Image (cartoon, rainbow, N blue to C red; front, side, top):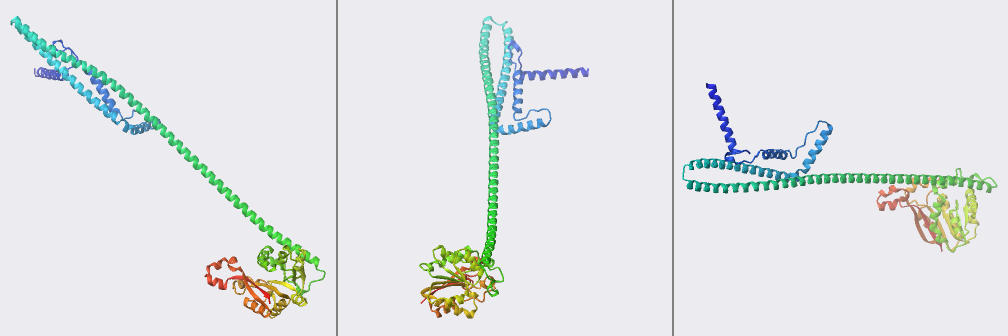
Length: 483
C-alpha cells in the first residue's frame, strides 16, 4: 500500500511538472476551446543549429590525421587568424541576430501563453454560457455579444501579430542569406588578395636575387679583367726590362767588336782598364738615354758655336746630342774602347792623353770646352795645370764647363764616389771656382744637379734645412767665361 501511494504521488508530481512546462512553453496543438497554438520546435532547432554555427566560427573542421592534415589545419588556422579582423563584425552581427531570434521566441512563447489564457477564458465563457442558459434569453444574448466583441478584438490582435511575425521571418531569412553571401565573397576576396601579395613577394624576392647574382657576376668579371690587365702589364714590363738588358749586352758586344777591328796595335797596359769599362758605365753611370737627357741642360751654351771640344767624351752622349743639332764637335778620350765606340756611331773622336792634346792646341783656338766627370780622375796636384791649359786654349769669351761629383753631399761617399776605382778625390765647388778664377775664367755659375732624395727616398725623414745642407745634390756643374 505504501508503494502504491508513493507511485501515485510521483505520477502526480510528474503530471504537475509537465503541466507547468506546457503552460510556460505551449507547443503547437489544439488548446482549449479549439484554438490552435504555433509549434515553436522547428524554430528552436533552427536556433540551436545557428548557435552551433556561430560557435564554430574560427574553428577548424577535423580531418583524418596525417602530415597533409597537419599542413592543411595549420594553413586554415593561419587564414582564420588573418581574417579575424574582417569577420569580427559579422560574428557580432550573427550573435545579435541570435539574440533577436531568442527575443522573438520568447515573444511567441508569451503569445502561446496568451492564447492558452484566451482558451481558458473561452472555457470560462463556455461555462458562463451554460450558466446563462438558465438566465433570461436577452441577458444571455447581450453577455454573449459582449464576450464575442472581446474575443473578436483579441483574435484580430493575434492575427495581426501572426502576420507581422511571418513578414519579419521572411525578411530575416533574406538578410541572413545576403549576409552569408557577403561573408563568403569577403573570404574569397581576402584569399585572392593574400595569394596576390604572396605572388608579389615571391616575384620581388626572385628579382632581388637575380639582381644580386648579376652584380656578383659583373664584379667577378671586373676583378678578372683587372687581374688579367695587371698580369699582362707585369709581363710587358718584364719583357721590356729583359729586352733592355739583352740590347745593352748586344750593344756592348758590338762596340767591343768595332773597337777590336779599329785597333791595329796592342793597347799599352797603362792605357787600358782591367775591367769592362762600357759595362761599368752602363751599370753605374747610367744608360746612354739617361745621360743624354741630363746633358740637354747644357745645350744652351753651345748655340752659335762651331769649335767645341768634349774632353773625356766616354761613350759620346754629348757628341751625339750636338751632332743632332748640326754641330760636329770633337771628342778626346784616353780610352781606346770609348773612342772606337764613338767612331762606330759616326761621331768624331780621337784617342789622346788630355794633357798632351791640350799642349798641342793653339791658344785661343776653341770656343767651348766641355769636360764631364773627368777632373775627379786626375791626381790633385795636376788639377791646377789641367784647368790652366783649358783656359789657355779658349778664345776670349769662350765657355769652360766642368761637371763632377759634389762632395758637399755626404751621400756620394756612401754609394757613388768610390764605386769607380779610378777616382782620386772629389773637387769641392769652392776649389774649382778658385782654380778657374786663377786661370782667368770669370762670371762663374755653379749648378747643382741630381738631387740625392730622388735616388734615396729615406732622406725625406731628415729635417729640410739639414737635408739641403748635407744631402743636397749628388753632382754639380761649374760654368765660366774666359775674360
